[in-house]
Image (cartoon, rainbow, N blue to C red; front, side):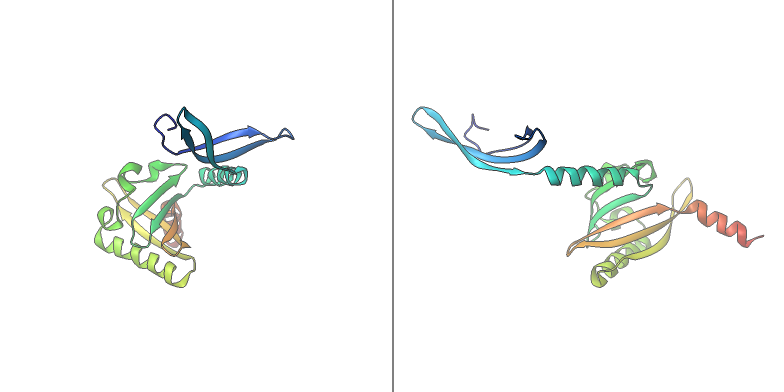
Length: 173
């Protein structure tokens, strides 16, 4: 970036005077004179706390048996996370950026969008169950939708097929 005269952004570790390791984020640009680069001008910020929080949340998400989606209020998939992405009926890359209406049958897409709208309007956790029929099998899932901010929700989805089958077997005894 400096060779081209462009601003730069860096993230790196440093050793503090007390020996601890700190993460910093730096943004800057070169100041040029007749002889070329004369100085660097910019800003450095300590992001150690954010790095630790990110690592902690990543570990929690990796340990969850659920799929986790970040979506906007219109039903567009922004992020997909989960320890077992094989639970997805499509590859992750085919989900991100898509709208629910493109991936689910119309009645199921409407159900999901209604629940997202309910979570946004009530600012409360919304839990519901639904059945997804694939070519191989029928999957029963529980979804939990919670508001992240005015335009985004986080959705945790758990496969409860085995539990539902066990409940049915108990009813039939």
